[in-house]
Length: 237
Image (cartoon, rainbow, N blue to C red; front, side, top):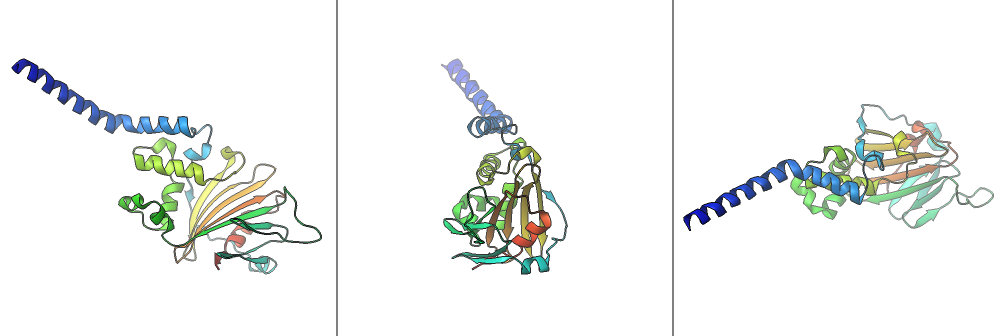
């Protein structure tokens, strides 16, 4: 009886040790495998292995250029954009009319606005990670990398990164930058290498509002400076 108890005790100790080993060394690999199978790896979704370069750059805002922009006001958001772009906030669309309506394949700008602390309220579990503002949330999301997964929290942000990233063409050619300018936080993903220019811009205002500006520039009329001028005009309505 004593030997049997000793045997079961040893098995129990071994199981505990194996579990601890799996949690410490095997969980990251298990999570990476789960994401690779369910979503895709860095070959299929290259941006999952990228993170923005932090720069102290001063955003080049062309005030004269902005004077030529067309103002658009929606229930939640205001922005000024160049002529020729259809502007959409969620389901509300405002095309710019010249001689005829814009057609499919024309340049388009999509807008999304959320109030301060939106993400911390939507995902309350992130507060336990010390993430309480939209800026902190977006910074964690943009810096999430599949190769750096070491916990369930890391996996959570990698999954969200795949969901939050819109079409950017060939992701292998995407550039990612982040910076602060005039008390705003900016995260900009862009691709200027293909037949269409893509810009995915996240802006967090001084007040903590979150704005997402996604630009599909089918005519390749925009560069980074012009995009900076556009996103500098966004504000809550």
